[in-house]
Image (tube, rainbow, N blue to C red; front, side, top):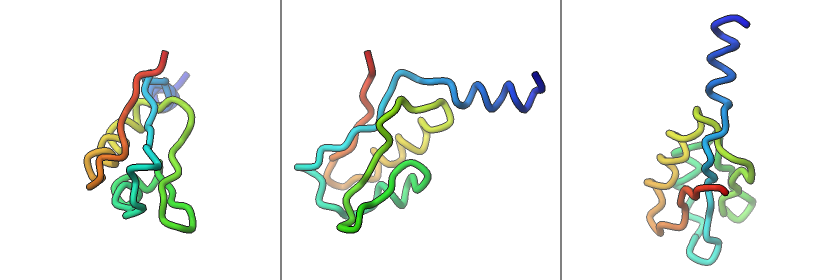
Length: 81
């Protein structure tokens, strides 16, 4: 396995965390998608669609940016079982 393949595998390694959104609290402002466009997509009304699987190592920093950018505090990182 090359060094690049090992690096990619390490970045894809599950972290035991998921990005979650509270649809009741969310007002569809869209700051989260601007902060983490690779992870958070908006539906046609502007509400976030987040990945359902565990985040990889390379996704943690963008996910944290999305959480921090939400003015309504509708996103959070959750530990998986």
